[in-house]
Image (tube, one colour):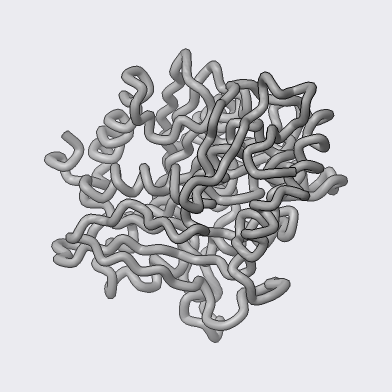
Length: 376
């Protein structure tokens, strides 16, 4: 197959994406807003596995798991992922951070991460900090878990947009590149996210953070990870040799954006479930990671955003979690917009959906996590 050929083949030439390479980055020639069912994913996968571009980038993280990414998401999501990933792999630089921020990418563990299968990029979870160069009073912090169906991590898309929104509010932002399936399954992803929470709290004094104002934010499958941290946290191990492991991992609040919540039918996102739990997961594990069942009075206050028209992750995921929070007496706020696709991130470019980030800012202000002036 040549670069620029149709990804499906002759029968689907009118609907599939046509890709070409220009200056090392993929250009999407045509986009069809259609989700293809699972029976057809094997066709895409066969072409993708023989695609010259993927072979050229075989050592670049997202393409090691490209088949799972295709199975997990619609073609539009895959093409979007390739656009971002190839730009990075080809040496393109992301939008520079504000000069007022000190950006640091850090390994979650020194040396080999627990459960790591190798020492390649896809085996090393990374926490990137956006620290103010001139810190003031101790600030609120947020750890961001971007989505990707537990097959990749959309940090350059969802994580970047969220960071650019939260930093001006006076929030110290951390983006998490956690390990994903099908190479890794639960509990590796949860272990990475819990470690990120501990790491931020353990370094709170050094980084100018209030240790009692550390939240977690998750998009899509990253929302499942964030809600799993919110319902499966621990207080730390005082006897641990590693001082970071002595610190608790409970978020002080959570922000869930079109989240995957349940692993149970009929509302589970099958791709996320397969990447996280494998093809034949234990029923007890499915129940334990259906986080609407795991909410307690200790679950942190939560803000939820979803759209009723979401065709990838049913809005019932957010509704079920909200109802569970309400039943447990946990403060929560749910915003469901009528229209809008899955993966809308911070709603940039959409006059209707761009309303939800200011609602989040107001929620953060009301609860005392950002100053009043910052939220306006």
